[in-house]
Length: 405
Image (cartoon, rainbow, N blue to C red; front, side):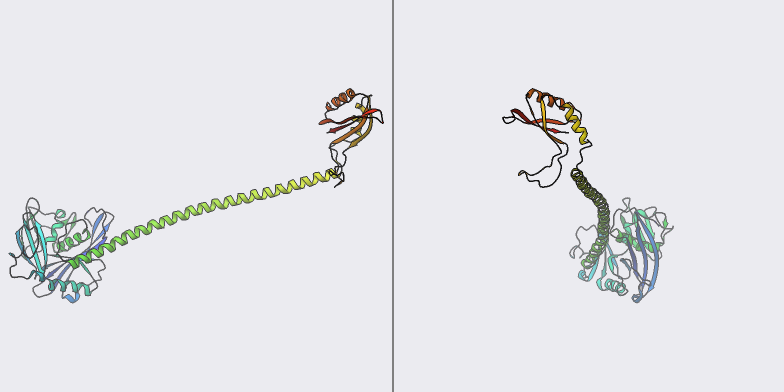
């Protein structure tokens, strides 16, 4: 396990393969799988296959694949650094070749450039061999130059890197000063990627996978092919869609859950308020019923002649004992019947708490003093002189007093 702290990548798993073309036309395939776990790149399975193109891999490969072709058919030239790659700028290196028939890879290294080419039909045959087994190739590199992507991770010494027949001399800036291939060249010490041992025959495959999984963060070392680049762009777009689609799905799921919780809370509060409103409505209705019942009972009490707790004898005694000697009573009405304005009694209902006193007197002063004395009694609420006039027939002054208790 091991590798590199990652930031935010589109690929979470991939595979890289070195396809070494042998002189007899067979393939030697070295394959390495990588995956991202949190912020670490993990090195997975490392497998090696040999044989014809009919069985270029022997297991079901579900990860997207990048390949590097080495061996027979790959031609490498070193030249002074080139800024522009075109048929004209490469004419001095390949004067007799029709470059339109080749895949071209440019690897700048300090003051030099390494140009690797391969015939399109050879590379396409390899890509087609993978495709027939259901594996699409999204990136193509040539030669060992992709290893430059992982040199900072390798425990190389003395400025020389040897692995699986390749020998690279590095200058002080870690640029490739020279390169050569000899099948007998082997590393003099075990190679390690950080702290994990890496068999030298899998180094190119690992570097291929490493460049692929970080393709949006690195300067790629790959052939210039519009078709392959378009396939990689489509893959990255799909990965980005899955990534942000999943994020959007989780976001909207969280939003939906939040809405559900808020709605549940509001619904619960609404149910509680409805319950309280129902209780208040019930109380209000009961209150109305009680008020109606009270009014009905009050009316019934009035009809029965309730006199607010005072007996008629008591009232008569109180009035009679307070009459001045100048006053002669003619009439005393207690709780007289109330009627309409026409005098017609609409309903036989006593007007409780009301006395009407009628009589005659020879002195208005006696009447005023009597009214004053009545107002001093605790059971009397109000006393008014409603009528005071002369009666020639009786040759006296007649009066009417209204008393409420």
